[in-house]
Structures are given as structure tokens and as C-alpha cells.
Length: 478
Image 1: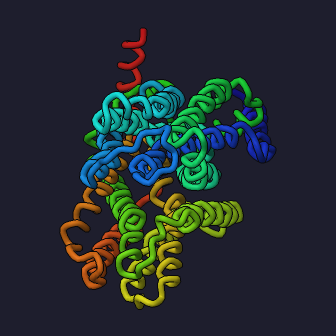
Image 2 (image 1 turned 30 degrees about the vertical axis):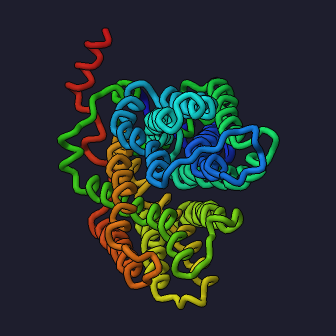
Image 3 (image 1 turned 60 degrees about the vertical axis):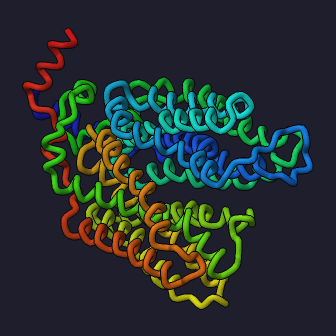
């Protein structure tokens, strides 16, 4: 190739980057993932809100059955989703890497939607046992969502736009939870009764699947909607950080388990995800009980206050996203500095709010609710921290990494409430609750300190398949 051709090629590539579309199909993909998460979390949270009406003995609607379940049975029903969810995390990452994020995301939302539609019938046929089975299967299906999202973003999100596209995607869970909390009371009181909560959430999932099949794609080169300008922009930006000659082939390679589990930055990510889930689910599931028993205010019975932490999480997340994009685009912060600053905001601000919550006077319930809202809201900054760091370390294996770290993290979301049950023997005793807050704050502090000191945004050597691996895969394909 002569010098003139090289200059022309580089000029075309530079022009494609500089002339990249501000809004394009990559944003459409993120919106589709956002809406998928939205309906998935409507399906996840529907039983949490519907079970109140299902167990209401004073219901004025005699057309729908009420169930006399014990508190133990209720806890069993509400936890059964997470049994399947944890079980599918690591296989979900492997399957997304093998078959593509599009198929696995469709499987996760679509089958879960069908199961939601059959939940009222399962209650009539097999009481709580059938519902447990339905919820287990829903969790099993949805276990592939986060790994699939990371797999898709690794193909669709240019490095400079990972923050805004990922935050858009991961705002879906909060939005879906807000929706189901807002409409569940009205649906349960309608002539269709509590079953309508499951029908609406399941029906939305089926509708979403049709749109997903029409407009989604695993990568820019597989999309029928993308322009050549946008495709060249995305692929050139991704190529700048990866020397892989064949991304499609490398995506079929087996996960480098030994390299991954001997990677210090990966272990830092795993610890961060565990600490985040411990803190988040402690705040979301236990602190409302703390406020009710210590401050004598039931925020769970108030739809507005119930949705407030999720709303704050959504709003703060979008604000952090906009701020992070501005700082990166104007080169105020490097990628490494951005990840660590936002992760610090997302972990140490909730840590401070939680410690302060333990010292709030019982007469200042409004201050307690504000601290809860700030704590849950600001942890969305971690979307721009450790959560994106999976793709920084290894775009080719981001989905597999997310499956592993999310599996461990969701185990923490199961253990955290159990520890509360062991320590808090008197729910009206603020001193016992304060010990729970110290444990949560300790997890946040240590995890973020490790992320600051030992975390990395450098592309890891094991991201790129070695030549012999490529040859072996190509031989197998042939």
C-alpha cells in the first residue's frame, strides 16, 4: 500500500469519527435494553406488591381468592425468584458469549413474561407451591439479563460513550419498579383484581419481545437499521482499543478462566459488586423496617414514599451520566479517574448516609427518610464506576465477567437479610440496627478503597485470543 493510500484511509477513518451521528442506532439499542429491564423488573417486583392483595382478608372484591399464607410461606414466595436468578448468572454469561446477547436477552424477558401471565392460574391450581416454581423459573430466565447487556454494550458502545449508554440501560430496573409500585394499587382495586398486576407486567414483556425481534442486533454489522457512517464510527472506536483481528471468532472462544481468576483487577470488581449488592439490598429491604419500628412510620404502605428511593436512584443516575459524559468529552478526567471518582461517590456517599442514619433521633423521621433516599439515590454513580469497568478490562469477555461477579453479588443479597435476622432480635432497638449500618458501611469503605488503589481500566492481555486459539476455533468451524 502506497503512502497516498494510507493517508486517504486514515483521513476517511478520522472523518468518520469526527462526523459520527450524535444520535443513532446505538442509542436505540440502549433504549430497547432499558425498556427490557423495565418490563423485567415489573415482572420481578409484581409479586412483592400483589401479595398484599392476595393475602388481604378484608378485601372488598369477592371475585378473586385470598390466601391464608403464613409469614414463612410469604418469605419463601418472595425469595424463590432469587434461587433461580443466582443459579443462572455464570451460565448466562457463557451463553451470551456463545450465542449472542440478543437471543439470551429475548429469552430472559420473553419466557419470564409468559410465566407472569400464568401466575394467577398457578395459584389456583397449586397454591403457593406452584407459584414458587413459577418464580424460580422466572429468576432462572432473568439471570441472563445483566451478562447479556454487558455482551451487547461491548459491541455497541464506543469507549467515550459507555457511560451514557450503560447508564441509560441500567436505569430500566428503577423505572420498571417505579411503574409497578405506582399502578399496582389501582390494578388490584379494579374489576380485574390482583391478577391484573401479573397480566399487565407479563403482557408488556410479550409486546416488548416483538419490538426487540424487529429492531435489535448483536453488533453494528448485523443491524439492518444502522447507517454506514455510524457503523464505521463504532467499529473504528472499538478497534482503537482492541487488536483482535476477528471479533466474531474471538467471541466464540472459551473463557480464559485461569487468567481471569488470577487477575487482581477482576477480583476487585467482584468485591465491589458484592459490596454494592450487600449495601443496596440492605437499604431497600431492611431500612424501611428500621424506620417503621424505630420511628413508627410505615413507608412501605405509602406508595409515594415506597417509590421515592427508586425515583432518586433513577434521577441521580441520569444526572451522573450527563456529568460524566461532559467531563470525559472535554477531557477534564481520564477514564481511570472517572471510574474511580464516580465509584467513590456511589459507595462512600451511601456509607456516610447510612452511618448518619444510625444516629438520627427517633423524632426526626423526615431526616431518616431523606438519608435513605440520598443513600439509595447516589449509589447509582457506581454505574459509571465498577459496573463499566468490566468492559474496560475485557470487552470480549465482559458478559462472562458480569455473570461471575453478579452471581457472587446476588449471594450477598441473600445473606445480608439473614444476618439482619440474627443480629436484630429487637426491631425497636436502635443500637442493634446501628451495628447493621456499621457492617454495611465497612463493606462499602473497603471495596471502594480497593477499587481506588488496585483497580485498573487498562485492557487486560487475556482479552485478546492468541493465534493458536483462533486457528483451533476456525478449524472446528470448518
